[in-house]
Length: 188
Image 1: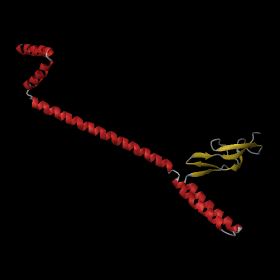
Image 2: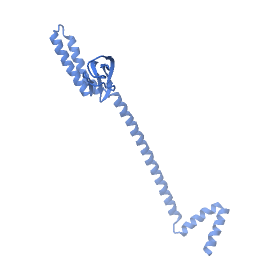
Image 3: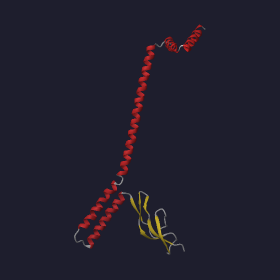
């Protein structure tokens, strides 16, 4: 009972004098077996730990920014040089065409042979660049996702089928680059 009265008196005194409260807390800690020096050590250790955590946070934040910046640079380079492989495949085609123009008196046969070789080079470049032809055959069903009907003509075949191809289309990696231009059979 005396202990409770003593505590009530200390609390009443602390309300009247706030500075006495600090001493009372230190006194209470001393009674609990913890000295003021130990409390100061714990406080210093906690402050040091807080500084370490803040430093670790700032380093992690900076690393995150660096990763984001590097990713943006990589994306920009990918966009800038995306066509590099395709361009490398087209350079020999241009070289072949330039060599063909340098021949002073070409024969029709040599020109035809040169054009065929250049077409093979171009086809190989298209294959490496995943550029594929859209070349429907007469009688194939009209596919509006790959074909563009230029005209409708009367024909002896099923309606809405390809009669003739005016111009081939192309896809790049399964995405339509240019539709094939076709004429389509008219409904009877």
